[in-house]
Image 1 (tube, rainbow, N blue to C red):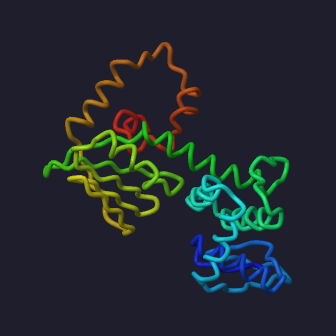
Image 2 (cartoon, one colour; image 1 turned 60 degrees about the horizontal axis):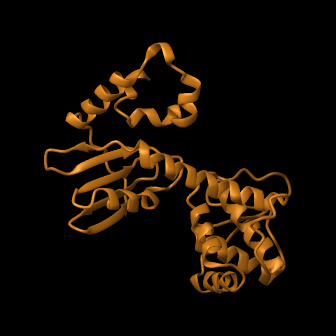
Length: 242
């Protein structure tokens, strides 16, 4: 039995509520097309915010706030299995009636922690990998292609760093745009054609990289560990090397 949900955290929690209600638990959750195997059944679950809230309230009684927040981080993962992983982790937590985050020998706990760690690691990396360019209207613009939905996670870092600088963060993979100016911030989810800007900042990144790069001491393997090649396309000091 596979549950078809809308992909939201409320959709997952509605599926959890329905599972306890019917005493039937699915083998997996999906928010898209799925190839059913012989004997499998696909059941569509309509998101019910009231049911989802009851599951949330149950978790808040069991878990500390920080652990509940990790569920909201996990849903940002780009892993297609994330819905099933979160479902299994929450169900196991409810059944245990206590925090199980440190039981890494449990496969459901391990998989959940892996999701959270992947999102947090990528968010940390992009705080250093983001490259801004200055548009003609004076707004600084940065486009990037993360594996996970991290735009609003890294936004506070750049707001604190560039308090008076109007800027736009454009996640091309998840079609998320966050804009900040005059102390106000807005995030929208919409597919918009990215800007292509080659300004003095882009040239500065290239010049700086060329000045510190020592060909004889190059360690490409180590470089890729810290700066994965899939991120290079939108880094001006690297994209010419692709």
